[in-house]
Length: 433
Figure 1 (cartoon, one colour):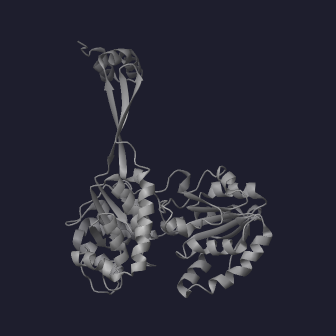
Figure 2 (tube, helix red, strand yellow):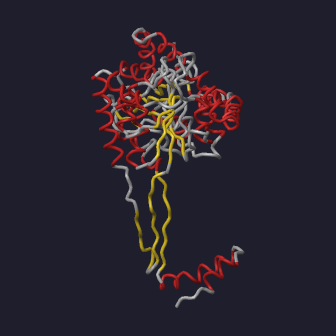
Figure 3 (cartoon, rainbow, N blue to C red):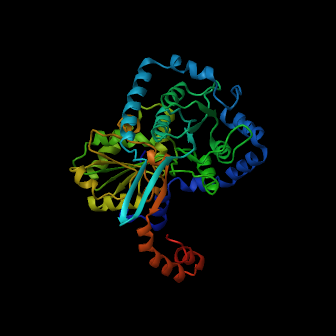
C-alpha cells in the first residue's frame, strides 16, 4: 500500500533512484521523441496532423489542429456556473499575485560620475504554453501559464493542449484562455506539439519559448530541442514532499500525501518524518482514504506511494530537512511545530507551504502562487514560473564625455591584457572633442 524506507539504511543505488524519480522514464523515450521531431521537421503540417490524429484524437473525429471560433463561443455555455465562478476566483488571485512581480520597464544607476548602467525589460515576442491532458483536463494550468504571460505583455501566445474525446478542446481550458486574452489554441500535445512549436510548420509560426508541465514524451522532446528554443522551467511528472513531526495531524498528512500522487503513476509523493508513530497512523488511515478515491486515481496513488515515493523515515527533523534540500522537491508542505522557523532552513524547493491549513491543492488552484514548478531536482537552480519567465532583460549603458575619460585607461589596459588590440584602439584612439 505504501513503501516505507529508512534513510540511514538506503543503499547508494536506492538513494540515487529516489533522487532521479521519473527522470529515468524520460531518458527511456528519447529515441521515440527524436523520431517524432525528425518527422515534423521533414513533413511539417502533414506529419503533425498524422501524429495528432493518431495520438491526440485517438479515434475521435479529426476536426483540425486549431480551435475554431465556435468552440470559443460555446465554452462558457458548456461549463457549470459553479466552475466558472471558481475559475474567476482563481484568476483574480493569480492575477493579483503576478502583478506584484512586474518589474519596472527601465532603470538606470550612475555607477560613478557620468557612467550610467541599467536595464530595459521587454516581453518575449512569441511564447507557446503547454497545457497537458490525457489523465484529465487542467484549466488551472492554463491560468498559471496564461496569467503571467498576460501580465508580462507577451504580444503573441499560442497554446498546445490535447482534445477531448469529441475532438474539441476542454471548455474550461478555453474559458481560462479567454480570461488571459488568448485565442490561438491548438489541439495537440506530446513530442509532436513541442516539435511543431519549436521548429514551426507551414501554418504554425515557431515560438521563442515553450513553457508548461508535460508528459515524459514532451519532456524528452524539450530536452532534445533545448538548443533550438528556450524550453523554460523543467516541469515533468508531479512530485511532493510532506515534512511532518509529532505535532502533525495524521489525518491531514494522509489527505495531503495523496494530492500529487493522484496525478499519475510516474508521480512521486513522499512523507518525510522522524516520528514512527505518525508513520503507523498514516499507514492505517491510507486504505480508508483510498476507498473514497475512484479506481483510476487510486491506482495512480498506490503506484506513486510505492515506486518513487512513500515514507522516508529519518532520525530527526534536522535530517529530514537535509533530505529535502538534497531532493529539491516541486511541492513542499511543512506540517511541523513551527513551520515559519523551519522554512528558513529550506534552500531547495519549488514552493513551500506552511502549516495544516495550506494544502498543496489550495496552492495548485487558488492561493495565487504559480503552480508550474521545477521538478526532477531542478528546484536547486530553477524557480517557479513567474512574470519573469515571459520577459527578458537588455543591458543599457551610457557614458558622458567625462565618464568615458574615466574608463578609457582601465578599458585599454584590460583589452590589451586579454589580447584584443581592436578593443583597446577603440578607446585609446577615440576622438573626445
